[in-house]
Image (cartoon, rainbow, N blue to C red; front, side, top):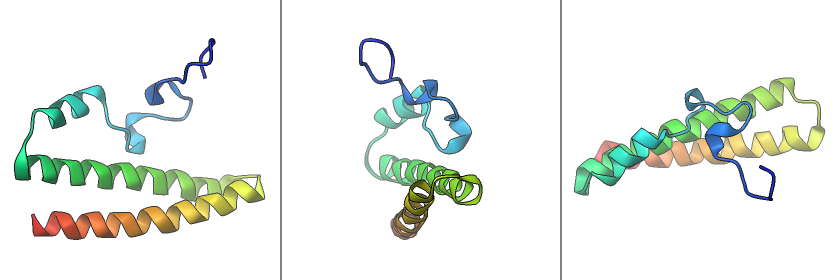
Length: 95
């Protein structure tokens, strides 16, 4: 959090970069200009990338983490986000 109790932008957080599946402002602006199937496809692709970023970070925590509770939570993230990626990919395949 920044001083004054305001949350930081995700891109400002240590360890969070666009390679971790975070969408850039440019990505989000591009999405807002889309409609219909074009929007649906891009949204699904972006969410798959976003979830894969979370999965990679969680796997890193499982491998390198020190806190048992955090490592358990990371396992739950891998399981949940992997299921969501499968569901999103199924939707994307139908578009």
